[in-house]
Amino acid sequence: MKISLQLKLGQSLSMTPQLQQAIKLLQLSTLDLQQEISQALESNPMLELIEHDDAEGYANESEIIKGDQGSSSEPGESDYQAEHQSKSDAEAQDTNQTEGDWGENIPIELSTDSQWEDTYQGSGSGGFEGEGESIEARSSAEETLQDHLLWQLNLSHLSDRDKAIAEAIIDSIAPNGRLSSDIEDLLQGFDPEDEIEEDEVIAVLHRIQHFDPVGVGYRSLSECLLIQLNLLDRADPALAWAKLIIRDYIDLLGVRDYAQLMRRTRLKEAELSAAIRLIEGLNPQPGADIAPSTTTYVVPDVIVSKDLATQSWRVELNPDVAPKLRINADYAALVQRGNSSADNTYLKDNLQEARWFLKSLQSRNDTLMKVATRIVEHQIGFLEHGEEAMKPLVLHDIADAVEMHESTISRVTTQKYMHTPRGIFELKYFFSSHVSTAGGGECSSTAIRAIIRKLVAAENTRKPLSDSKIADLLQEQGINVARRTIAKYREGLNIPPSNERKRLTAD
Image (tube, rainbow, N blue to C red; front, side, top):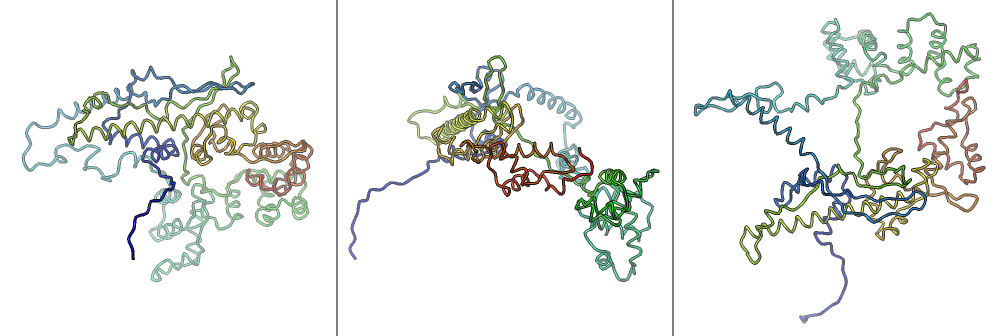
């Protein structure tokens, strides 16, 4: 085998560390970006926060868009804002006062075998019940449905035997309040030596069903609603009619077959309407009000506002999203040229990383401003008139306008939010497909959804609009949409079909 050298010429794409960092920051959400900045401040001594007084000279990056012309001015200098110095000073003052309070009680001399925990018992050390758990964790714990029921069980005057049965029942209750286990399954979970009978379990279950919320532990929808109706103390004939419907004809009520209901119950339309109004006031899932819910908070990255004097739209970055950063001039002055010592090399490396980080942040803000500005220019109709004026828009349109790749636009618009006079929206909300119109134009799918919602809101509830009828109404407006497309949009809007929207009386 002969060994030889060969020279080849080729092209390859390589990502430098700077480019990787810029792409990483570009796709981060607001919360992730703040965490990334905090980590950079902790790890790089060359980076520092701009204080409140120094930050006053920085101008917030913004663009002006004329509502009638669609023209915009060039973006100004980007900034990274954190104007919380006064708050920090106040917190530092409180900390100093607190330290002065407990510091006076510490003896000057301590024995050699003494422990800090023996001398000072504070919220951050031992000596409290539930050691290791922070105050925030204890105070922010949300109550579950089981906790709420067990609290009421402890206040009930039940025997130890009945309490054991009740605890087993409560453990089998789903978050919506329904009993997820059969009585037979509950009996099999007890010790055979206890000889617990089915009647005992049912009696305890009936007791729990009258806990708050009323109806919890129900085994069927009719049982849940009847429990709530039985607790109503009112001399109203509608109560007896409602019990009759729930007990014997709940299936007909579910499909809204009012004609059959009136024939079976021999009720008149006014009587049936009164009974249904009473039933609609009940809670079919009583446990859902107790179960903890997750709340998501959104911080907008871009703020859009209208200048009433000039009738133009202003696009600017949210100044509270990220703090303003700069390179520490004192540390940067310590870097010596030509010095190859370990300390000087450490300073040089951190200085270079700090410059890359600031440049990546600047690139992120510039790209975000460009994309947000083009979106606002394209969707001025939405800002002026609402969803029905939304225009079709795809990533390719914005990519061509800002001369960037579609993948970059996708990163910018993911988990980035825009605050407008009409609410806070993710940037991806402004992108939608289009449907052709009779005049050869295009209509946004978002606008079609808004029209469907408007038509359903204005319909006669005695004769709700079917998907075919909605398609015909859109056809009259020059929008060509198939019935199955209407059904898909309606389901996406969580609008039930026409048979489930039917009412006895028109709204």
